[in-house]
Amino acid sequence: MRHNAGSTYTRPARAIYPHQWNWDSAICSLGLATLDAGRAWAELETLVASRHENGMIPHLIYHPKPGRSYLPRPEWWGPIHGFDRRCTSGITGPPVLGMCTKLLYERAPDRERARELLPHVVAWHRFLLTDRDPKGGGEPVLIHPWESGRDNAAEWDKPLERVRPTRTRFSRRDIRTVEGAERPTNYQYRRYLGLADEGRALGYDQAVLARHSTFRVHDPGFTAMLARSCADAAALAGEIGLNELASESAEHAELTGAALQRRVGEDGLCRAYDCLGETELDVLSCGSALALLSPSLPSEARKVATHVALEGALTSYCGVRSLAHDEPGFHPRRYWRGPVWANITFLVARAIGLAGDAKGETTLIDRLLATAKTAGMREYVEPDSGAGLGAHDFSWTAAIVLYVTSR
Ligand code: 2M8
Picture 1 (cartoon, rainbow, N blue to C red):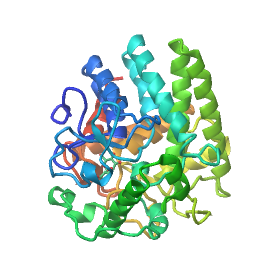
Picture 2 (tube, protein in one colour):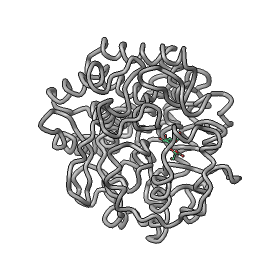
Picture 3 (tube, rainbow, N blue to C red):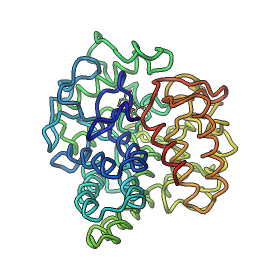
């Protein structure tokens, strides 16, 4: 992890991801907290420094000298800039920052720094529940698969069919360092880049995109992370004397939690939703397990999702699978379509622990640690063999191992 950590933020993995990513940074701060508390706070401060005027914290913030090693380059988005003038993407990412800020505060309390940071975290939540929630229902509209953090998740297959590829010639550097079979396909990349072009044509007006993007979905994983982050922001704001932010965040948590309650299906699981087709996306992925993060998930739904993660279709001896093994789109080596990721296992473990199931939490954390011990700090692993996949020396895997072993 030190190898990837600069003085103010941590790259996910030097060769393939040479910039700052939103949820990667938030999770990395937890590992850093075990080594150097000041540096951990700097990680989150650097992240919020990239905020946009509307409160959005982008999914990706470019190194000032971006080089040519990562596709898309800043020009694909505009270029557009954050508050600190770094170039950023025009989309957002999974909102674990509120939750990580609270965890960091618990590990390394710094009242002044938390009081500076938290208003930007809450402004981001406010953005997600206004510009990105045109109907005011409490579930942000995602306008790009990258916003879910689970880029090629099988549930995005159908909604992606509508996206018009705008460029056919581009050079993917990711498959120079990682096997192509472990990454998204060219078919998907053409559409990821098509969406970046579409957003640019609309000037990255986020409220317009939430209504008119050709890709618009609700992701229970994203909404649940938001619900948890809002609840955690409310608790932390209360503790450090930011009372208005505390009540606003409590309202946000209630709104998002209620939206997820409405998303619970007949079998007790929350699934993704295609806003354009107005249909549920019938895929069982870790998005359904992440729903456990919502503080107000009904107890029957909590029981079902916990079972699926610990013993059911999403279980693996390595942790929580990104996609159920019996789904038609399942592929044990391909990125978010089957492999096990440490961050997902950690988030689901935490959600289960917070609901009072210490045994379930320990089971998942033990699986995560045993896997890291044999596979090393890999980006993801094969769910049945435990073989390491994707990037080596992956930052959040190391950060999570540091964090959970130093409690
Ligand atoms: C992956 O996504 C980026 C695009 O944002 C990529 O493939 O280039 C995802 O795994 C995402 O969740 C993660 O934040 C990012 C950096 O680790 O890589």
